[in-house]
Image (tube, rainbow, N blue to C red; front, side):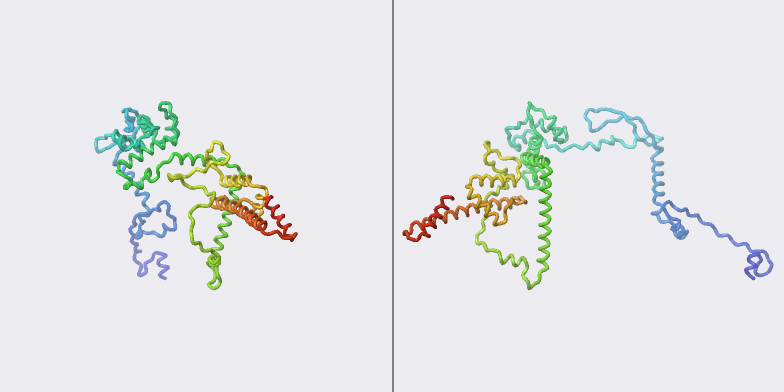
Length: 420
């Protein structure tokens, strides 16, 4: 019954006037910010206000607007300017961004006082010397005078160490200087000045000029080697790829063997133990490299050049050579001086060792070992020839016998000796 009264607007107790419900005060209506889903916004209420992170974009925009209003209205004016990087006080004109300051009677203030692009004028630190440093710190060089060195330093400072541009513009009394010569002279002078001013290399040991001095000769060899590398034929590249693939297979096989060694049981001997049993104890260790091994460095500590090739009338050492080709040339030149019988014996000896072909991996150690093997094989053949000659001589010194078989054997040894 109370529900019907509520529907018809009749009071529950008596026939008095209908009570008007007091309206609740309405609070500020929340607006859904941009980027928030409708479901998330429906979970919010007046008791759960929006977090500052949701209103950060609106707050920043308001701050920017206040900042612009505080600095004044933006305008552009045609004004003159001077570049502080120039030495001739040249005056140019351009459009400048300005603000109207309301606090100072609408005075127009430029946004930047100095030329904005002057901060990008970065100059190289070029080492210069005075008269005293030239006499005491710079070593005398017959190929470089002080006038030419001053000209080089001026050009380096003008071109900001752009070496190819410096070599292109270099003109001093008709002398021709390469890029490596110019760089070598400058870095040599800079290194001497740096060490002389510090009084030694103790405090500047990690400096680039001290730790890694520039070497023009090494740079020339590097460029020549790189040029030779770029001139490789497709067949040579395919051969090197095959060598790399073979090396990768050997490395994977070695790792697999090491894994099997680690998994070996304690009772069964491992591969390392078997190898240890087969090793022969050496009482003396010889540090001399094998025969045919070229030195890596010369007396001064620089990379050594290969020795002159045989048959070269000028005796000039090649700049870049292939190690495998050089090793084959050495072996062929040695075999050409042997007799036919000795060559056959050497080839049969190598075939018995299953070395009928030249090693594919031609690194320094393998080529040196192969040359040593050829040398020892020739020594073995020569030793065998001498032993047979000694045996035949002993038989000839014995008293003569009537045995015909012994005479026939002596004749056979004599024929073998004559053939050798």
